[in-house]
Length: 437
Image 1: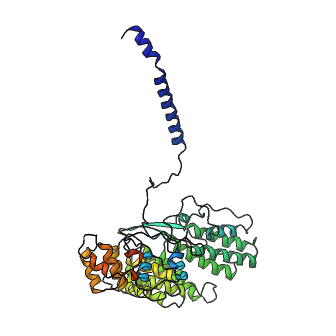
Image 2: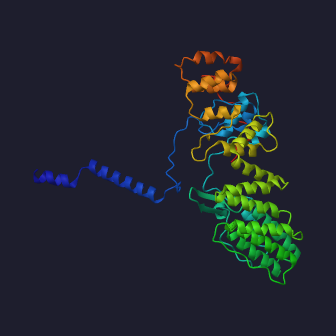
């Protein structure tokens, strides 16, 4: 290379200068993008993916289900929409009210940056505290439910649970309002009550703490409230045996305003001990305690205990109820109990069970990995619409059973799931049955 060529090379050509400018601009834009990232989450990355089918349930709103439009049912759907489909195939359509109560088409997740719920019980309680003059702010509570949660590690599980339920904050709000009205918002007894209650709620997620005993000169009502607060503090701190004894003592005090609810709370302490610390003996004890209490809340928790004690027996009973023409006054709870008993939390698939009803058998095959031959054999044993559809979805076009299966599904009986071609879904409707948030 001679001197002139070297000089031209050192000066650079316009084309190379333009390329360098583009590289510099691209680097600047990349740095700007990295300096101001958006949509960051702690458990990522969540990479967007194209979705051509509904993964967990139908995309149509619940109104369309009320008009008996099921669409194409997929084997990956969750338990709730599959039960709706089975009922439809069996001629047991759900009413609009039942669909609304069962929360069909729930969203898969809630945005992590959603605003504070407008009527959150913790917010209601924090607002109620402000009626007491010169009250100190509390830092251990916010609308975020994690501040009402506790984590426990056992030899077999890592358990995170909501320790302080919504009713605890609503009950505290109602009690403080009543005491401030009776004693006065600026009265020493009102302030003493609030100080103790703040300690109770600090146990929702923090280290164990206990309020001081009420002063000797305190009114009988404050002393009764303090006994209840001490029992509640033990419950939230995980001292379940202690809380159980304290609630039973309150149950014997007929003068206490907490006397009627105390037996139920004692049973709840036993149940919480059984579930958090995995003590089956305590579970049976809790069931006996709830059975002796004739209230709707006690009956619900008795059902919960029995689900764990006798899963196969209760699964049959729940499946039988889900197979009735009408689901009764609490369809959502019925469905929740069935899903809790039927689906394994470890695998997300049906549990191995000896329980058997038409609904359970169909769901086991639909959600399981049964070979096509067994599904077709089940249809031949039970030649009804649900099993016909299960058999149709288990075979491919080359299967020798296809003509027999299609012949069993005349056009007059075909649902969209039986039809090979896609159909345009009905127009979306608006109203109270829109998908739940």
